[in-house]
Image (cartoon, rainbow, N blue to C red; front, side, top):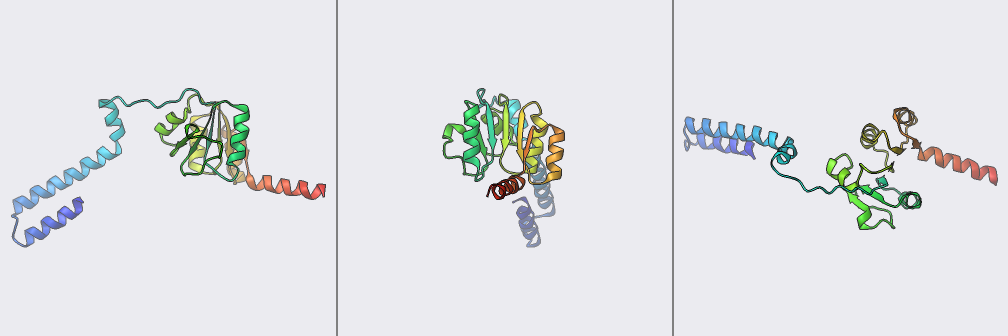
Length: 188
């Protein structure tokens, strides 16, 4: 909207409705407003935390976190539920495992601190990804090195680098499908 204001002020000045001093003052206010709003938008959370106490939504009882959703989400969720009491599903979209209750689900991007707090990432022993999202996988490896990490990655090169970085397991769905096909052919 500030750019529209500049256009309107210019049009008013060319029509003789505003003088040079008014145009200069309005242009200065528009430029200052644009700069201030950019700063406030980029550091709004930091500024708000200085003035207001934000309520904590942090869970402290999470045992495992399942990131993303796929056709195998139900199977992976059930396996995790067999090993852990409290499994949380974090997903950007609406798809979640059938047996996951609303209390077991957090919708949002795991790269945001608020979503991590809602999911209870500080207490989670295991983190499993179901989407090969490079940004999320790199963040998980960086921030949760001491946890058991099971990542899904199609690229063999990235899989090896994740294993070197601290991932406990890297699942390659294409390789698993190929291995299963070979086993079926051998058994027939």
